[in-house]
Image (cartoon, rainbow, N blue to C red; front, side, top):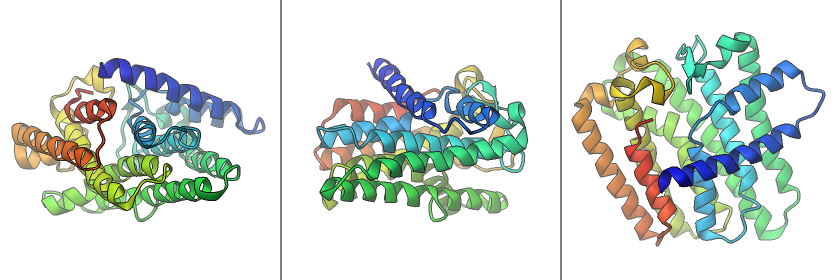
Length: 297
């Protein structure tokens, strides 16, 4: 069931992304657009936009205001992957089974393609806001604010910097959790929260969703740590043991495979409890949560 759900929603998200890319100013260089689309449509699970859309669908009838947010956050996520793969960062050759952006287009164009996706993602979100008024506009702008903070200096980028600076001390579990909660968790949290905020949900629900998103964000990263060691390289789409290559400690290094799996299982149960506390009975969200914590790619 979850595979069919993902396949359908990935297709929907891709259709929206293609539409936005078709709207790009025709004067931009062909090489730039080609590089942007190379990474944007290289595959991927589209978990962030799907989470955003499904959470939004849980709390509201209209999805019109959620689609620009979902596409914007996926562009921001893709920009972060392009930059993470660069030689100055993680120096990866493959992403989603394809050569990384800088391996195909060169470091200069890859950097600019990432920059362009980041800015175009915000352009899409902001352009939609001018068509709104009243509470619709207020909630929509609050959702953009959530995404902006999560992707900026106080969010994902703080995690990336901590990841670079704390390589030698990353066996410290508090620092490792900090890195994971910011580098990986911030955009996942923003996906969940913005999908709810745009529908004007209560502060009580937001509080539960903050806790929920933090649990699945950490679980997502621990699963990535596990797959980097024992995963199927063809399914994952990139080289294994990249953390070891970059001298980065992970949950697997500290706790081992089995204990790490046990931690993921506990995080999943806690996350599902938070959904129950805010009365979310959407089976798609529940199954998506289980998929995030139990995936093999």
